[in-house]
Image (cartoon, rainbow, N blue to C red; front, top):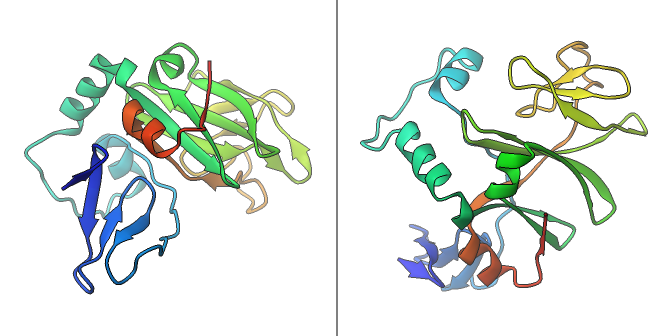
Length: 195
């Protein structure tokens, strides 16, 4: 089922209809309720199974490669959308293909958006750690980010500093979503756009 050209799902308990792009109930007993946003990402099976070797998997007819190929072939139709504190910003996939690491600020939160073309993974992290705001460049190895202050390498998926295993050396991972550009701007008409 579609609403404004975007997926609508029905919960089994109440039969209420939910907008996946908003996480909000649009019709039914739970009208107006909103689900918490949980960060997620797209990654290759190779990367996932390396990080989580004891994983079970559901095999679907459509492969991640065909999904990624379709997105990259139509990059002008997709954005990575971010919401922080009621402010929205879209990062067009066309821009991310040219600049896979973008430093930005949204609602006074310094962020880094990191795109990995090989897997199609896009992640957004809060750049603040221990009272300091870091700046990043792409690292040449293992799809990592490299901070310009310490030279540390950071994993975009987890926000973990791969050179320092302490719990304090972790950037906060923020929610974002890969979306059709038309759907993102239909639901977030005041969204800013990265250039």
